[in-house]
Length: 211
Image 1 (cartoon, one colour):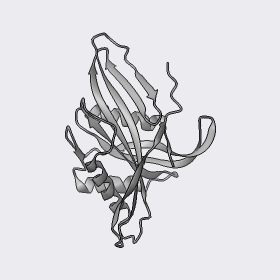
Image 2 (tube, one colour):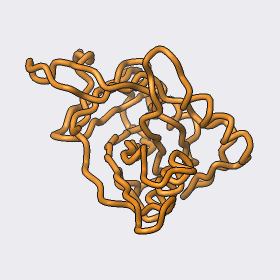
Image 3 (cartoon, one colour):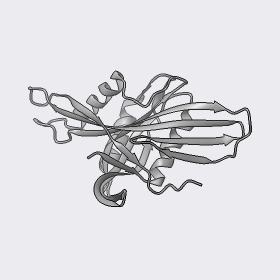
Image 4 (cartoon, one colour):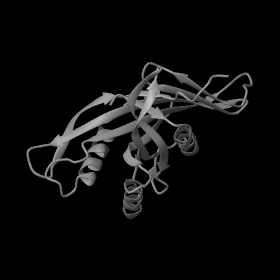
């Protein structure tokens, strides 16, 4: 499933989570469902992201973020994994900060996702959950020489989304958002898994209308 639609509430949660934690990284879970939506006027089956849940007990640093309190993290995982209303835990998100931030997966990010596969498939011989969606938000703080209008704006790229959030006339944040489907498979031993590749998703925000 290539296409991912980010609903407004989820998009706001992602961006504000990254802005609030800056200049430290943030992370959390993505909650949504598979739905039929129109993409470029054609109905398609897509992953629709309904909510972004930031992990409030995370240990945040400038160049990395970890789960922090293990018991609190496990409570959060169980809560979102058992959400009702036809919604499922589809994956997670995190930010990369600083002038060299990029919207790509690092080796540490992939190690974290593999840990999630083991947690979701604990006690299973073969993986029942073999796909994880990870959104990466590269965020940079900007200082403007000329005053700018306080507003949000959004840009669509072939696969990524870009957001500019101006909070003060002379201060704002530029965010590039990318999504990656990551897959796992059994590594030959029952109950042990390994990563089996990844594909960059195509992100959509069809509700946004430029001003």
